[in-house]
Image (tube, rainbow, N blue to C red; front, side):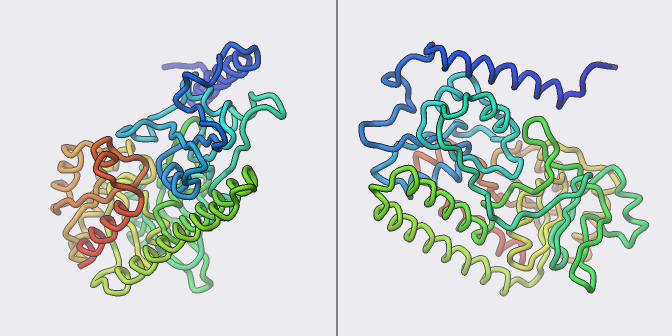
Length: 366
């Protein structure tokens, strides 16, 4: 048994040391000029670095011809598994704007920004600020008002069955939530989350992200305000169309519950009156208990649910094994944490993927 520091503390210590080293390296002028850096922005353009794909897509659309936008996470890489390297820190430090999600999604951001000297580095913008976040209890269970929308798994699934068979939470008459199960949380970096970060998967919350990005561009480059405002209005209009489509899917659904491999779609469920049952909770690499799999299968049979909604970046073999254990088929629902090189080459973006997600969800809810 390792009796040293817990894994999270060890990882955080490594990050802090790396960030301090990078900050000293940059301050000493060892990073070199920007001419040979892929994040270097052209003359007169705003240099923007984003922490993952949805922010990159929104920033590119809002910034238009006035911004040079670089995404940190490479195409085809699951952002859960990604952590910054020295060259990524250099890109951020040399940018005008750094857009990150917040809500605990990027576990390394606070240490990195804290390592920079005051007054140096980019304007850092937390894109999720002001979003209606789903708070989690100490064990990762959603704490929210307004009825049931998400169920997770945990080591105490059998214990949860003694409390009416519910896991996750269910709404009370007073509109508040009652905790039942244990969804062991979603770890990005070194710490357990206190909020579910997947806000971009609800068009309602994505509107908040887009508006925060708009504000950041206008503040950083007021000379091109009209263009940023116009680009944002077009983006917001498309998000409102997605919002209307999501409401239509939910209203026409024969059933209101869907089963997912990874609990990414809590906001989509909550904002449109649906219920998500997650086989593996918020952490995509978590392992469900046998008791919880049994409960999910029973629920699928009771409700007539025919599909497990899996992710594109998760092994199809794993998804198939899970589906077989539940006695149902599979469909793909993309959590949009990153696109593949093939998808980018084909011109896919946030909107094309979300439209396909809603079409898939409509089939799953038939």
